[in-house]
Length: 441
Image (cartoon, rainbow, N blue to C red):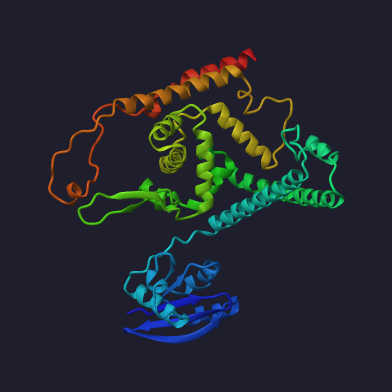
């Protein structure tokens, strides 16, 4: 039988436990350095199986060990309750439990992203950190103005050219003026860093078809699409969209016991919080534009309130992203001119030339007639969804013996009505309207 090896990883060292022939023995410690870990990897057999918990350096350790052994499993520490709830918890005990759980094939592992996905995740996280720091600096400037009784600025952007001219004319104490100048210098530094990371991410987005496909959804720009793709990685590892929703933590908590009906609570908030927050931000924009997503939001809001409705819309967006990437289809109710405008902004962000004075891919978006036609098509999709809900009638299920009937599981199905399909969108009419508007312009 192959050996099972448990590694309890720390910042400075790694504790090793080996399970062989049903007996666990401690194999000491090695330093958490590349040289020591390469030596550990060389001492392992090609049939060995290794388990370790997910930590900040677990992926780097996996890269060094994986080529030398049969399998490496990175355990989800949230689900490894045997270690978290142990009465006696030491490094040796943790390593031994990892080896035992791996031998019993009862170790909940996490997906190990490929190198390109890990690089994208780090870049997206870096951009989020820069944006957070810029927001913090802006809030500090606003706080200085508030405590010195400075009225609200007459410009929309306090930190633009006009806003800074107005800010320099305000009477502030000398120490507060120095503080504002220091904050503005830091803000300029983070602004330059943000432009650099945006250029890098823009070039990556232009080379990823799934990113450009997700940008056809209203409210989803390149930043949101990249955050989703970075968090999910390979969409095909989720056989069903519900699993993607659970991975992003947008599914409700469920408690059910015995013959009692299941009770649903708040969302679990498991998974990558940044991608979940981006989906919620995209949902806030999507519910303000015509389309089925707005009709869905208004239906939930009338029963459950605004906050629950927008989270439900974010969940709907996650399901929509899964279907679009897996089936390689764009959003059925996309607005072509708006999508072209998003792509053109992405190209400019990536550093491509501006080509001023030439008719580009986004030339149709400024035309009011084109936007009106696209808005009417989106409203048709919204009306189709409202009609579907109006004709929805739940069938009375036949009584069946079993647990499903006892715990109140929903078994109803729609009896009438049919969702608007992709073929129902009159694309030829839209394209002719765009060409006609461009000819008139």
